Length: 151
Image (cartoon, rainbow, N blue to C red; front, top):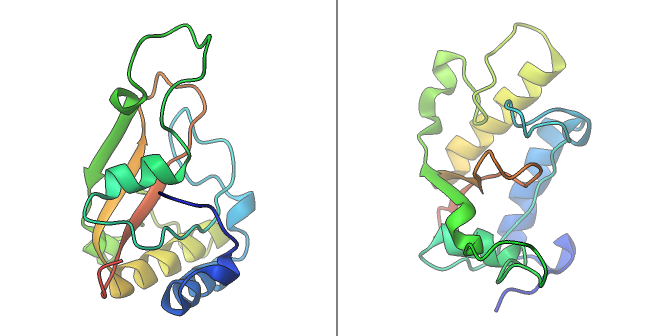
């Protein structure tokens, strides 16, 4: 039931949060967000409106993942490749950002990630990280949470 749409079609509160995150770190799309073997591409802000009570399922479906395409060479369920972990991003005071980037005084990455973490900590609850097992070579990672209104 998830339909991709333009950010302009998202609820106002979601757009305002997305705009605040983008403003906090304008160079996000050129920065390495995931700090492991999968993290070579830049990041972007996305909104999943009305995700329901299961954020893992919401992220999975929002990415359009329902079954592996024919000829993928695996009988493994796509959902079995997913990783999901609840997070506590209040550690911003300890110098760690949502993506566990260690604060390095004065660097644009550090300033941007820490600013985004502050916004996410203040405006979102139930923080989480959704991704895929590391043996999946290139896959998205979603750092997210629920708005105070529950979406």
